[in-house]
Amino acid sequence: MQIAGLDTSTYGGNVTFGSGSSSPIFFGSLNTGPSNRVMTVAGSIYQGGPSNSTPLYGEMGGSFSITGPGNYIGSGIFAGRKP
Figure: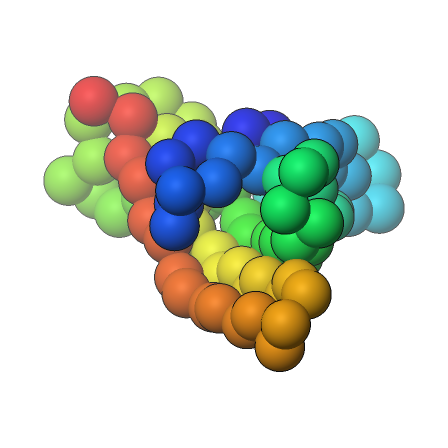
């Protein structure tokens, strides 16, 4: 997973899906490199409601937290939908 341009940093790393290959839950740690910040991310992939025009799992959402040197902290939520 890569998240670019968040507070002038780009975070990247691998996320793991929950137990079993069909689990819609994911989690992991993403690093920024030079700024030594670490983002912990957790979320889920959703099928959506009856008005969702995309097949199967076309939506996702979750939360993240960031820690770094100099007492740097951040957090937030995210959501997305396949067009």
